[in-house]
Image (cartoon, rainbow, N blue to C red):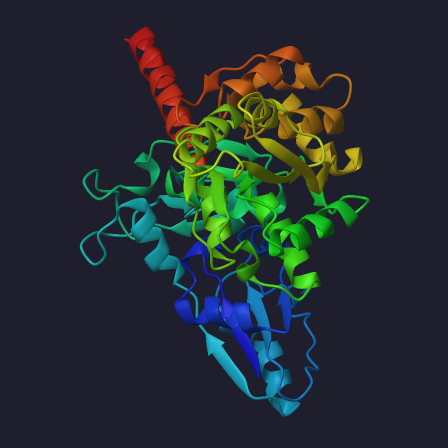
Length: 436
């Protein structure tokens, strides 16, 4: 079957449930170039799906019998891809069409206009449903992104462009596997996320130590397994799968984690943390493990396995060893910088002041983004707000000569987003006072 899906005048986050389900089941997805990056960032496609890029009207379909293909276009299917639907039917394919939200309905909803009560007028809504949305007369270059408003905006109905981060373009530097949740949160607050993963996650060069640690755990050799990131959990889970094992290898071992994201990753393995660090730093994790083991029946039950990045801070293992624990630090994955060429557009946007904020969620995102931007990286960041997830990441920025404007008080992406909101609100209030 071939499903033709229209994305309408708004972002992919407003696709119908049926469309999202089909994208997750598809063996093949043909997507317009303008939607490609957004589709990948949202991870709507299943890992097995083959994604092809083609302009509307240029897609071709030859899906094997029994496989599902999805054709995703920006706008209404019957306006932009009717020829493809006809071709698919003529070729004997079963077809399903999922229409988009209408342009008029989207414009009214995002512009704060009550339908059916006002005359059309001469205003247009440009870039509806995005952080670049604005209302008024439009230039010729914007005409393709403009939708006529069916009436004048109502201040009481305007909601989309009054959100706390509306209009802000925020650079997300997390690894691509972890960017989706952050992007969704930023979009819910009105921002336009610009996904530019500063780190790539790879298996370590030598998997033997990780494999041996799994076998030792299965044999009852560890009392605590501590995870400092979702990447560590995912890498450990991948090793379990390679060995044909599952969550039973943990046996009676206690599981300790930093942060809600790490706990969520554990859930994918069917596990729940016994020990959760109250703060998102290694010191807090070590202290939580020490406190948990203080009531252990025997001092011998103090062997800790710590699967983590190949290069990371040593504060947690050192703190545990100082308290009498035996700690095995095992490389579960490593982070690498992307090719500098991939950041040419980001570098240009930063230099041109087209990025309102850059977010750093770990010391590795700092290190690798600066490496990707090159020798003048710190200078490029002078024209934007730099936001850090916590004091350790802030210290890494400052050590590299990067000014930090925002440091989250709660060391999570939610805490970082809230701190960014408060920063921009303070700036807006200050500017308002100056104008008055």
